[in-house]
Length: 260
Image (cartoon, rainbow, N blue to C red; front, side, top):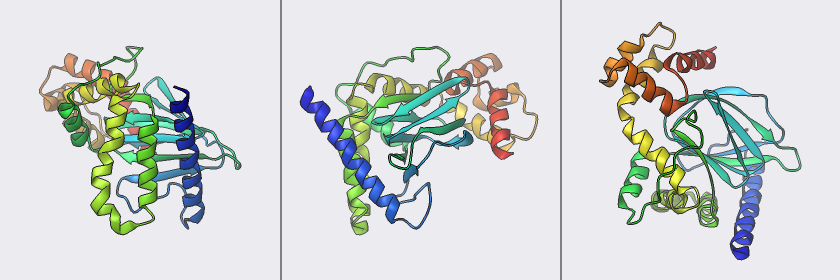
C-alpha cells in the first residue's frame, strides 16, 4: 500500500513538472492547446473569480491545486490527483480555488468520446458494481474520482508524446483508452460506471437538450421538449433533473447567463 502511494505521489510530481515546463514554453495563455486533439493543458497562478461555461463531455483533471464547479445546486471540488467526469453537456459555474505563483494550478481537460467509454464498459469481463451518488440531488451526469498511479502514468506518456508530434496519430488513439480503463477499474469505478450508464440511458434527452441550446433565448415549453424526447412531460422533467441536476428552466437560465 505504501509503495502504491509513493508511486502515485511521484507520478503527480512528475506530471506537475512536465506541465510547468510545457506552459512556460508556450507563447499562448491559459487554456493551452496541444498537438493532441481534445487534450488541453490548464494553468492558473492564482485563484480565479467564478465564471460560467458550457461543459462538453470531458475528463477534467487536477494535477496541482484545486478547482470547483457547480451543476444546479451541487458543488463538486476536485483536488490534485482527482478528476471530475462530465458525461452530459451542461452549463456550469466554477473557478480555480487553490493556486499561487509558486504552486500554480496545473491540470488537463480531456474530451470524452462516450462511444469509446461505453465500448470499454461493454468489453470489460468484470465490471465494477455501479454506485449511485451519495445525494439524490447530485446530477447523474457528473462525478469526481481519484486517479490511480496507472492513470497518471498514461497522462505522463501523453505529455511525453507532445515532444514527438509525428507519433501522435499513430500512438495516441490506443493510449486514449488506457486512462479510461484505469478509472473504471479504480476505487471510483463504481461511481463512474453509474455516471456512464445513466448518461447512456438518457440519450433520448440529448435531442431535447440541443433544442434548448438552440432556442435558449426563447420561451420553450417543457411539453415541447418532452415530445422531442418521446416521453411524457412529467417523465422528461424527472429524467432531465436527475441527469443534469437542473430543471429545464434552470438549465435555460444558465445558458442565458453564459450568453450574457
